[in-house]
Image 1 (tube, one colour):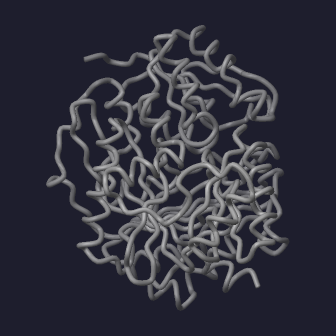
Image 2 (tube, rainbow, N blue to C red):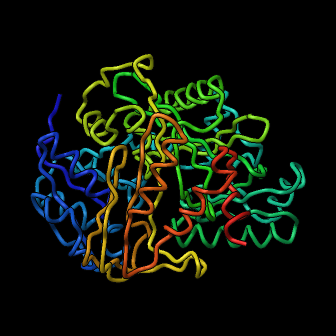
Length: 449
């Protein structure tokens, strides 16, 4: 069994700091790469080595594979942790790491290809009996085929990019005209974002809940799920609030979803951390939609209710260690809720708000966790995702967790830029949220009118 001496963190912001801290506690040296726009990132102060890999734009830095591999070879690292976003689900990057004898801290190249492509993942799910949303058999070659499939299942439908994520390359259509327009727009957006224009079509389930299952799998055939996270509160397909366990989800549904996720992972020969995402309709039926072959932004809520450090587990699994526990050992305790703190202005159509943070004051107290890379004097660059941190709470009950989150949001101070904190405060007092009656359209329905 190998032991890593040094790993490179191929990411930025709060996730880079999160990975660095886990590595330090495992007595592993860290190498941080950064762009010219990120010279003031917090984790650079703590890394054992740091290397600038290019200008601010992602394509010239965090998405530039040759530069990252060069940095890894120069610093003689054993492994690369990709975090989430950027190259985290890029099978080509994982393959290059392998060819350079650098361990990719994530699933195998084959698993990424089998599950990272949504079309292939759906095919595998159907093959092993995991319920899927009705839709096209594969990639749509043109708008005529899209119209044919839409007429077969009936409107509304949703067009999705096979390589998509973060809501990009997705369009909902309610008639023929919006379908043709949405098909062309989704293809163009997918080509620009992922260099892959392929799209497929699904029946659009109205007002569903978005529930995902966290998986961990070692190299010896042990696969466990760590319960579920409810990610229904979204804006334009971007998650805003996540919680575990999902409010009101029956135990038999939770177990069925967990077993379905494990069955799919086993069929793909999966190892490391991954997430299987489902939609749950108003009748309580669940449908597979995709697998995220990486760690998720919202992994802290699962860590808090299970007591398992998912980032450390990723590193240990990549080192060849067995999980050391089985499904019967996994117990969920209490309720955890996470808010994504974004540098954006809800009062101005969520316009991004880069700039200088003149004051940052983090909340604290029992049951409060803050994952962030910002500080007073930090300048938020304009080149990247608007998320600047995550505020997570953990308490015995959902009511207690909501009360703690309200208090923590009141304590949180981020001055100099606009954030989505005012919107979050509204949501945590909304009667539908308080009752756990959430769905993916709730924010648009009640807070964006």
